[in-house]
Length: 176
Image 1 (cartoon, rainbow, N blue to C red):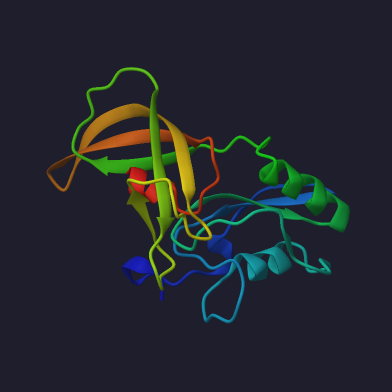
Image 2 (image 1 turned 180 degrees about the vertical axis):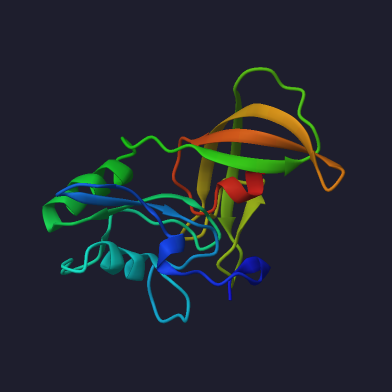
């Protein structure tokens, strides 16, 4: 069951746009893309939105815990074109993130650090040395902008707009 005791239905994975080449979903947090699950998946939502869809073609990925725009190609060629945009980094992605504490920075700033895998684990970690990276390690660069300072549960938080320049797995997690 998803976070907060809610159970997702296919109606909870809304279509934002649909054309002959693509279906664009607003994927909620804690929603699987596919697989065996008692709850709705993006794959089930796609088949619900278009029962004639022959094959599910994800143009990119979003983590289970991440909400946001998810693009499916309705044809092999459409998926190939969109996937190349993500792989070649011509698709511009922005993320909103909430961090602990307030931020006093004005204007955009650069978060530039190295990340690497944790041995025997899927998670990433910040590293101080750029030598000896594992399979998924490397330099990670993100442009950040403090959007607002606020409070959550009576604690100070800051909302950031993040734009990754590199595509390291989970690079935004250690940044926040």
